Image 1 (cartoon, rainbow, N blue to C red):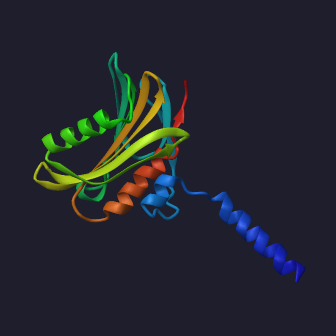
Image 2: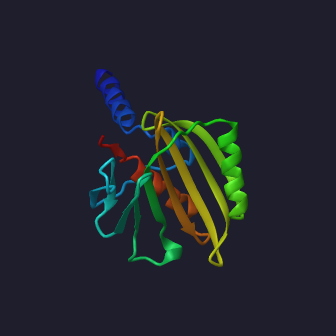
Length: 185
């Protein structure tokens, strides 16, 4: 009887250690893990992400942001996704004006928001959404998350997902990469 009780405690301890983020739970992501990764920093070294070794990554910066674009270029566009992540300077408040602006940008882009919400991600207040529509004559989904870092800085990332197959799996892979997010400064 004591061995059975000990076994149950060990099993619950193991399950408890593999805690999913709130965002992963929202999308019902199973334990998506990205293997064979390398740490990649944005140009100004504000943040790092663990990205698969075989992905192509480009960096960009200007006086307002430091950005990285990455994608698996060994796969067809309809089988992968493009991930953009950026550290931005500017004031950001998750208020009614912000949500109206997001809806306006989506409307101009002819994208329809299908799900959204607020949560804490990486111990920061965040807003995420998923939108769908057409882009470059393809059915298209966009997963976007924005984190408020300080009074005048924020982090934004979005995934461009083309086609109609494995949308949830590609969003979950994007989330798994974002869960590796580490702020350097």
